[in-house]
Image 1 (cartoon, rainbow over the protein chains, first blue to last red):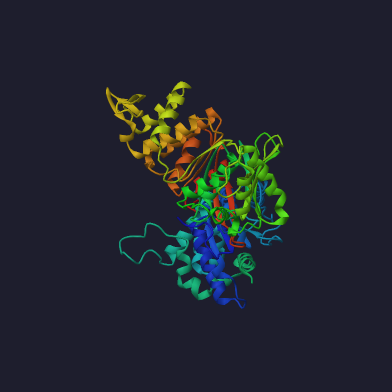
Image 2 (image 1 turned 120 degrees about the horizontal axis):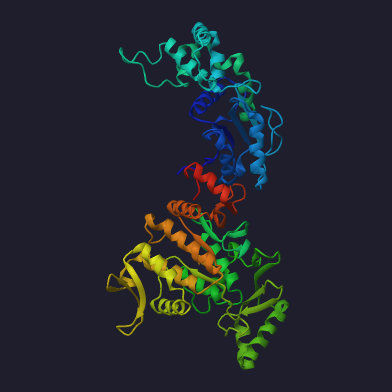
Length: 233
Length: 362
């Protein structure tokens, strides 16, 4: 059984699920390679909380964890989702666990900016506080430099014009998969078949992402700022 | 029932405070984080004016206590094996803010401590020990222990202990707790007497219910002495068998229940998982919880077993009594090296369970 906070990990990045885990892990590795500063990457633990409803539970468990007293930074990532105030929701969840007893966690007033004190707490809402959606939307934004992304958008717009309903919650996930097909990902292993599942993480492996170094794209500026402060010396 | 417990300068604890205690408390932690020591401290507070208990506890740990070596042995109870600081054990009850406490202080046999020794001399002579003999005990002693207990009403009482001298009569045992150490096996004679008391008190149904978890064919239980020594026998579909032959797990759990039927205020069980198959653990917890509730007993048990923790969570959740259960994890602070406790209440246990106990809870 794993320790919730492995020994030596003083910075925690709490993410919703597997896709977010892989995205931020890749992003952190890129920052470690490219940053002028010596970022505390080896001290970082990425922990999945398994969806927004379980964030309170994870925070509650973290406060009791063996190595919690050594933690100096906590970054929380959440999808903005739909019809909800995600930032406020994260604030409320921190408030809830604070009411249950010490140790008390700081509650950020603004996205990205960390609280003062120990540990420093910060929140990142993806794609952004001002926009509904999820991590897949952010990734699609970054991919906009590729002409295939334009085809994908056109295709989905066309579907909309034809009154084919794609629920908003699934739209960006579907777009990512169509994009990957457009980049020949998942088609090359078997002539007659298509890979059953295409993952968001497959995007980062494409030549496009690597060649254009999309980690540095304008759309990921907020996420980069968030990670940089989380890992700052 | 205690709502909080604090122990200072005792064994491996410099200063450990545990808050938010429940009816049934399960204590876990890595090796050498003081699980057994915590139960010992609780037992001392449950029997606060009985100095020989120190040596009994030491022997339960397998440490021989030879005559004339009492001082080095009792110093093993002091933090860092030095008696510079007094041992202090205290607790607050649910219904009161006034703590009950026990402090244990060592006095070196020197001029400045003469007063304490004179007091002990008076105790001994009051016991009927001739003055010359009492004087001999005191002269030979290199140190003495003083126990001061303050009860719920704020009344202070003391007891003294001098190596090799008789124990003065004011050191009456005030049994509020029963301690079942690791490797504890129910003593046949004691079990027979506990069984008789339970029978007289009309409480045998608790015991029979537990035994049926292990052997559903049991119809009833009796105390029989076909070979002279009274033993518990169970009847299974007309066949009668001594309980001793029916497996370690069942005998162990019967021991817990019989101990509870003696109505202690606190039952302390070290390594509770011993001999209990994982498929029965949840039922055992339900039974312990039920008897503890009915007889108003607070239970403290230690474990190394994640299955036991899960089983307790399941048992108390299924019974809708998760609010009565607390899980305490002892750990060493990475910053200070001192032992601390993390207490998991109902909400915390639900949090841990939500991740399928995937993370550290032991």
